[in-house]
Length: 163
Image (cartoon, rainbow, N blue to C red):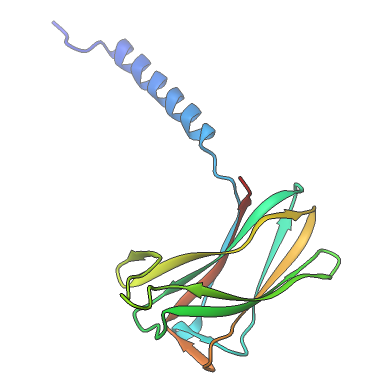
């Protein structure tokens, strides 16, 4: 006497696989671009401008986030950055100084997600920002009161459709 019938098990497997694939395709990410750059010796120099180039294929409203991965050697509770968004025509669309809280300055509790000794912070730069088709450039600079900002392992850009 057989407990399992292979044709039934096979049908259940394929049905489960189809349901998984349908569910997985329904949960597609709205992230259009995600890229990062590692920093040599976990240091971000003041004169070091990091440039991220990305292409927009479909005009839409987007959210642009800057993210930073930092180590315990990061000496401050906040981070000042200067950023410029350059259009496909070469025009400066945004040119701003931004202040980001990486930690609660009183308690020292990190605002980001931690894995081991590293913390990653997603920091919004632009929300519901209309971008047309073309190739854009984001330029980022650290604007702290030090020439060498220690404890920064990598920085990156995340662009996704606005909700």
